[in-house]
Amino acid sequence: MKKSAIALLVGGLFLAAGAAQAKEGGDQYPNGAENWYAGALPPPGTYFINYFGHYGGKLQDDKGNNALPGGKEARVDATFDALRIVHITNTKILGANWGVHAILPVVNQSINISPLGGRASKFGIGDITINPIVLSWHHSPELHTALALDINLPTGSYDKNDPRTSIGANYYSYEPIYAVTWLPKGGWEVSGKFMYNMKSRNDDTKYQSGDEFHMDYLVGKHVGEWAFGISGYYLKQTTDDKQNGVKVANGNRGQVFAFGPSVKYSAKNGSMFIAQWQHETMVENRFQGDKLWFKMILPL
Image (cartoon, rainbow, N blue to C red):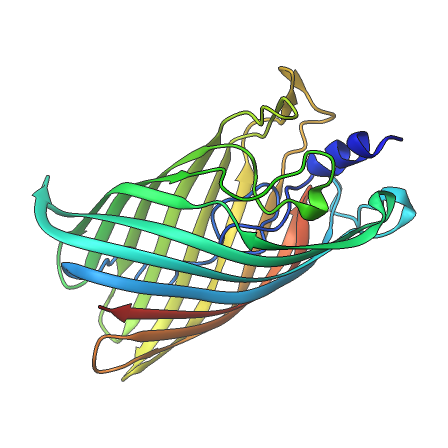
């Protein structure tokens, strides 16, 4: 089989690591990135957020078993560092504070796919995310919500013949977002960020990846300056992958559910430091593995 055909076959199951994470399934959003106060955006001001971590996993097929291109496991390992700027203004829209944000991801990726020659690595900038409209409401001390629209840009390097050296998806995607944080009495927190991702076609391959519903979640408890909880994410592809307008195989619909512990420390100056581990389960047509994160939020 020609290398280009093998790349497309594997690419139907994933697009290489990039964005703000080790990206699986063509994700441009870093699944699991938001947890504590996901729906409770900060007061007006400018904030720097840094996401640093590592992802490692093995490719799974549509039955949730190890995919074996060339008779061997395909594996990804990636270390990522995403730099995010958030600016919340005093401008009110429908009673909400209007804000904007942008994410610049950097990734060092290594992928092993036997039919493409084994392991290859790539370092560089992934797909940049911009958001011109973030609306945040603070309904009460207990309830906070937000609406937003992320736009993911195909800025990462891409090679249609070799997903091992691609750290960009090579398509645009648009993602409406709803986030909510509930802070009941007793120091508890329940937060969720709900998203729907719609992708443009990859013009180099004429491949159209399907839409996806996905969410980040957290249930935790605040104890003084510390907080402890369980966080993770869920993703379910809702439409089929297509090439040249024709359904690919059985649709290559991906899914994943991840969970793990999360710990947060809040400093007196408003800075927050979060460490977490997320283990993936119930995976189909994606990589399955583990993410280790360290997240830092600094008011500027």
